[in-house]
Image (spheres, rainbow, N blue to C red):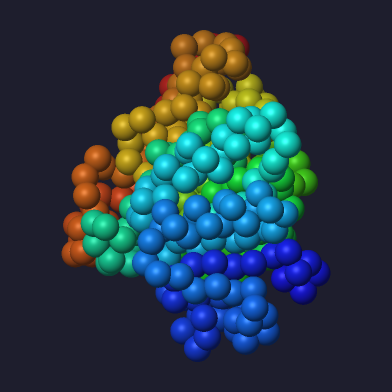
Length: 325
């Protein structure tokens, strides 16, 4: 917002002193009072107005207070923002960012804890990006704002309180990391000195935290070493780093917080199998939430959502398989 007066923020309850349900916009309306616009409670109106602003040359960032409400703006995203550049033969662009918190594990119940981005993956013209604890989330958001087409920008609620992790330090003291792509990077992590992984684990967003803990448990307790592939861009797919890892490991676990059926992981597995990287019968497992509403009760929420133990079990099952050379 300092670098461009074309960047606006539009959404519900984003003005100071409240600054949004998760305080992401706190202080901005004080610094930029003419470019932080509070709205009535209508997600369709928020995204519709922001789409019109983008078509007129602005760079709006529309906030949906909870990701569960993104579907209320589904028509604006699926039939308008993502299509206008094609419908008008490239004479307009829609540089729109819709950012929203997704995910559970905070006891918010069945209508405020869902992971729904799978319902918008694969929409032609719509890019879906997810923040993780790797890399600079501000830089990722700036890249989304600079994108000429619409971007759905996913932020897991638990990541707001976390610091960005650095390889070789703190929680990543045992890992080395390689980054592929500059705009919306894919991160590949291995244990320092690890030459070859027995299992590849693909994930995004907050699931990386669970996968990292699972990888440590697998290495320390079972001597099974994993390579972790963390994607920032969920759609359209850019899976070459994952293909390269699976070519080596010949085993793949995909981990996501969304529901298992027809999820992100199912499509990733299909793309990997179709790419013919397996030299034998595909060795794959999916880890995801149960196909149930998410309860307020923590024990029930924990039972519904995927866990570190689920990832460890899936990886151990694959590691026990003998793979033909």
